[in-house]
Length: 307
Image 1 (cartoon, rainbow, N blue to C red):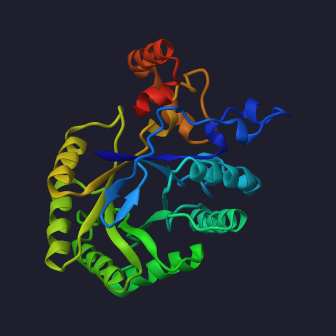
Image 2 (cartoon, rainbow, N blue to C red):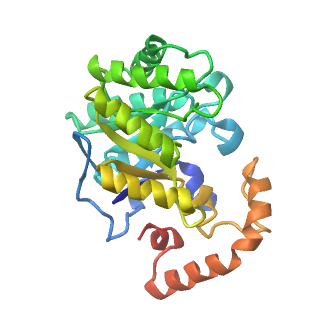
């Protein structure tokens, strides 16, 4: 079974709805089929649907503004109230001076939620550490993990993930980063380790490399949706199933293209508009099918895709 992680924020809601005086986040309801039974990811139990925070702090692609933080907190609280406990982030999320903002907000929202409720929740943070060219040693990668802990003001990360592979352009760095994952696991900085954006061959290699050092590979994150189910994705899923590695599907709604909110005449703001303008015309048959199914079942297109 693959988990899904959707990037969430007020930009996923209808702006007209948000501007309605009577609007309240309490009025939002999750669908009745919402999956609540936890699944195993390494030593952790997580919700089958995760909460992505790529957009938090990203002004360039997603149009984030700090004035949105209150709405983000409310959406975060709502996710926890509906038993979502997996939150995916990265140390590179956030643009310019807001680099790392996603982790900072996530840590802050957790603290404020728990203070308000007066109790702690079983929250699993899966963060990704960028394979920056200046991170050349295991120690530097461990330091990146410590920096993430400081930003979130927590003592341990659920899943520490290598954000991408450097095998094609810096293979020696790749081994150092793998050793960094081993070190942060052995030091107890993370409960488990994972990878992101890995192809089938490198996924097999890192699995065996970590296994030889007594470190289980918990997860592999890959772009997976109706728009990205190529041979590599299917092979990765097969490998994950055979090795007992949990696959995490990111961008399951294709950056919003599968939601039905957009069309060639109704595009999002920012750089996504250029991408959507090129791709959406060719998606008419797929979107029409999703729309028909959604109408017959009285669901949204996103809910149909989620099934």
